[in-house]
Length: 291
Image 1: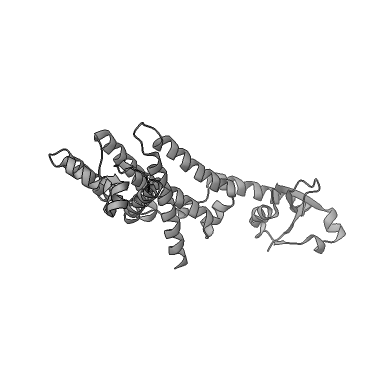
Image 2: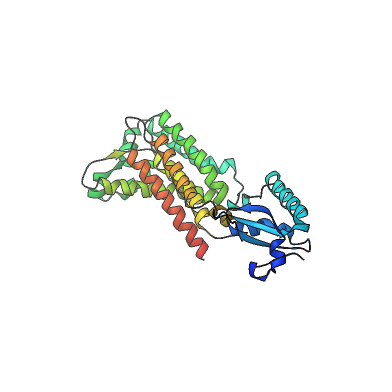
């Protein structure tokens, strides 16, 4: 069997007979690439490059150099042509379209009800009203605004956004978690909005707080994968902190692109929904991991 040797174990003759068959950014990467040599019956040694540029080389006896270089090259080609299956990073759940359509159906029915003679009463009773929540203790108004919409464009925009982000959350954590994230994040976002306008007056309706909670939850799942433990997550962590920053930055950019336009847009509710959904997913997944 081939084996890795330390430099101190080599005789002067062996040191003089070494040939480099590959250079890598670190010793760990070099040893990983050299594992393809383990079954050849020859030895190798990983040494820092003399140029002192931080790289490490795989060195083998000159008689073994051609075979070793060919094995390493062919192994790298196979890795490119057959990349590792990373689907284990984000487990896939079966998602039924009928399950995802429950929420849109409820939103459509409620919207139809607001178009009747009772519409004004429904909107008055269910909308987010910071003064009524604080002064009258009408805490249901943290939930009910998620089911109310001003017009058809408002309704269908939120339905499409919720289906899009909700589908990807459901694929990773199941339909129940997608609905849970939308509700917990939506209510949490409205609560943060209430704290902001605790001494002021603020009215709002719409499921967009829940929609952006799903976006925040999706970003939270990616961040949890980067910070978590396990074989697949180690692969992700190898990309470093910049990947984590990039994921969060991409989520915030999407939040800004989708949630900051329009004269009547409740930008803070969108931001708070994103934050609440992100926090909910991170807390829930790490709690499950500790159990």
